[in-house]
Length: 623
Image (cartoon, rainbow, N blue to C red; front, side):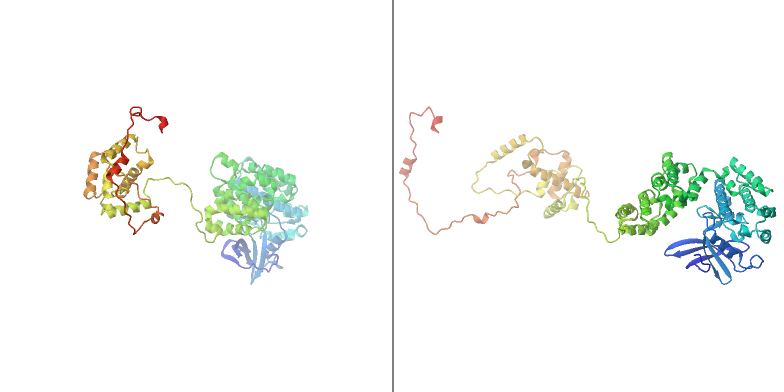
């Protein structure tokens, strides 16, 4: 990366330039490496430039060399540089010129940006002992997250190399309005830092001229106009004093500075800072917070801090589902802001193979997983989760499996677990019972009607039940044969017995054994109603019985039911295992019974009456 001749493999540079300067043109570029897309900015210029100042190396090459040497969070990040033919290529982090976005910024964003530029110049003056010499709008870049970065380092030089001759050679190429008219005095009076102080004052006034709508901004504008551009170079403040101005002591700027300098803070300072951070961030616009602070809030040091995990992340990694005050106080970002600014950063963090970072994300994953599209979940997050279940860390595997379970309703089980699946479990919940024929009953009914020449589609039924006598005609009950040796029963006795039974029945649901036949016929009647069509009528006698019943319009009395007097139970399907065991006696011998005389038989069967027991009868002792 630091080698000037190391061109990035697979880099694609757009032909259309974003901006064209005197010595180079700015282009967008990207690198596709292992399915990871990295966006860059590439500056392309001539390798050699005519002029006394650029004899040893061109301005773009000097620019890249200074970026590579002077590293600071507020200075444009150097990536690599290389020479190709007569062109020189300088690749830096993705950024756009400030001039292209300044019209969309509010005073707070400008304040934060100026504060970053002031810190970068303070670093160059105090730490690097160098002077930038060309602080202006064209030297400032804005990254994707809204941070301002100082660039335009082609005129930078050490204090010991800064003299009137050097300033004279570069004066024509520098921004004219930012050139201090008293540069000679700065060199003579050893106030070399005042050159950049004057240029910074001009930059601040240009940016705040139409944005200073509050008292603090107006005061700082006057401060830059009178103090920073003072004709007496000795009266100009240093950048250390400028950073202490009230304009830069805004609470938002304080939070931004603390997050940037987090590695330098003590554990006590971090604990106190994160305990109140969520409440302080709620006071600012969510879009501004997400754009300028989301990258810092999702940094490794924040995610691994114990206090931040308890006090900040539950608010940070959650989404506002509505606009109520309660929802707003429990989260920091609405859905649209979260999708635009936080989701891309979270997708990058999921690629980090750190167990603690991964478990922190998965702990809150259910709160923000619906912010990703199904494509993002399937192509970017799911593969990383599948890697997590193969780790040797049992805690990580457990948390990952719970997260995969949350993805099943969104992506489907086939996508999450893969492989072939089958229905191995059944729904055992009880269903509501309906009064309808079973398959076996329907089959029996169809066969029974078909055997008597009656088609189901020829049956016409009304809403009233069919008289049961017609059913009996269709499928008459066979008469049970009288058993051998059974006693004769007269019809009078049968009718008397039937009448007595009718008087003992309260309703249809008394004795289960006595009502079995009647209930069966009643069920068959209802089944015929549900299966039959209303287009035809019953043929022959069955149809006449139905019409007669419809005219009557009431349920007949049980005595009118056409049921055989010889009630017979259904034949049992049980097999008689003793049928073949009935003894059969066959003999060829004939026995002759001697005839007994009539007179003798009469004498033996004669009854002799006693006179003593004629009136008394039998007593209990005689049994």
